[in-house]
Amino acid sequence: MSLLLMIGFVSNIFSQTTNSEIMTTSNAKSGNYSYATVPTQFVEAKGIKFAYRSYGKEGDIPVIYFNHLTANLDNCDPRIMDAIAAERQIISFDYRGVGLTTGEQGTSIPDMAKDAIAFIHALGYKQVDIVAFSMGGFITQELLLVEPTLVRKIILAGTGPRGGEGVSDVVGLTYKDIFKGILTFRDPKFYLFFTQNKVGKEAARNFLKRLKERTVNRDKKVKLSVLKKQLKAIETWGHETPADLSVFKHPVLVANGDHDRMVPTPNSYDLARRFTNSEIVIYTDSGHGGIFQYHEEFLKKAIPFLTK
Image (tube, rainbow, N blue to C red; front, side, top):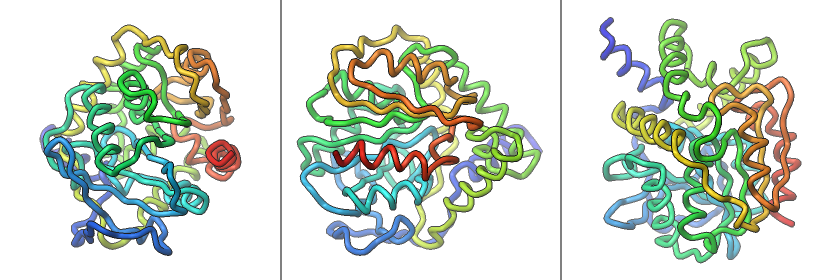
């Protein structure tokens, strides 16, 4: 198999999608949905048609979920999404050029942040809470620099500050584990998100199984070009000068596993120190996907944080 074919093959693995018809609606209400059944909606901003899913206990301030590298709508952990939806309205969305969202993938983390701001404004919200994982945490920090009053509370998981230790190394690590996934016929997240001991492997299997609970109306596959552009954006961001996050007074909850290989765990401690109103929780014997491995424990911390 040629290198190009191998990368194309893994692009399909990474996205975890099906070719089922996509359910779309422009006026879906929260209803009695789970993340496996909530319909996909669309809203236009900046000439981009953003795909998103919204459900849960409606209120003035929703929770927006910012997802990870190469993630489409089907890459949100339904256990976390459903638990938050029981208490708050939660909204996930595809970044520009990802999944069913139109346009070309943004070439920088600040560009992605500006897109996110436009998306939130297009939904009509003046303030939101954010739960961000991995690259989503990078985007959230850039969003704060542009429009800090748009955000009330923030959860940053598996992420780190701009210019953080090892952030720019994610490119090589990602490709390494992608090819490992090809050779072992596994989703790369099995290696990227979890430790490779017995506990971590079991957590990986359970997590990947949960991502398949939505069996119909799944999102569109993520293109190979998205992977390349997002990795380039992360590499650039990882080499840039750290931002002054001390100026922000927002309540911030930082979470990670104690063996994160993608965004090394010391970055979580660094990130928590940079914010003036933060707390941190680190899960033992877990990696980048610590909040997925310990989703029950994470929710016991996250739900009160988001509802108090």
